[in-house]
Amino acid sequence: MGAGPERLVAAGLISRLEALGYAVTLSVVEPERDVPAEIGTAFELMRALAQRVRAVVEGGRFPLVLSGNCNMAPGTLAGLAPASRAVFWFDAHADCNTPETTTSGFLDGTALATAMGWCWRQLTGTIPGFKPVSDDRVLLLGTRDVDPLERELLARSAVRVLSPDALRNGGLTRELASVCQHADVAYVHCDLDALDPSEGQANPFPVSGGLTVAEIESAVREIGRSVPLKAAAVTAYAPEYDTDERVARAALRIIETLLAVARGT
Image (cartoon, rainbow, N blue to C red; front, top):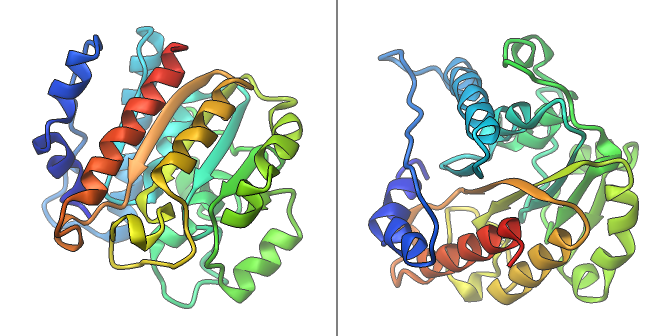
């Protein structure tokens, strides 16, 4: 999945956005250490990303983060603080495990839990500007693969979860007022495995029963009508699984929609 951002750029992302009138600056955040350690390196990148996002926002521009993993979200959200943030998390998986609940040990599966302050608190304390996102301002969309202990954590929280069917049946409209009630800005996170595999396989973790590109675009537009969109991420794209490049094309469409919503068009 680490190859995904470069592949999307190679697929013509920047030229497409420039053709739509955007001024695009490409900035790459890389770890400084030669031998990466999953946890230490991830938080090193979050720290650097938080500073980069804050600089972009203060410069009046829009930060679009392309990331191999979802676990860069705490860094992006730190860059938006101290604004009150609503998080809209498109993902087949909840990413709300903690080190105590995970059975896979996959750090990426703790991404949203980390952003909400449920775990890794010593390390999130090293991210400039980090402030946990209140769980009552978090909405999972298209989620359909949740681990048992993770499900228990969610049940005890104020996080709202919309399955693909619930989203299609007006669930987003019903939840938006509550999620956005105390939020100043929105962050939209799109793990590309939120897409149904019939739209293309984004990475090694496909889950049936997902969303279409059009459904994600429609939801993003509805979100943008409720709260200003100030940052977004597109993540978890593993090009080797996308043999017909349908997911790459889907990602470009979703990015164009995100930026149009942020621009108010």
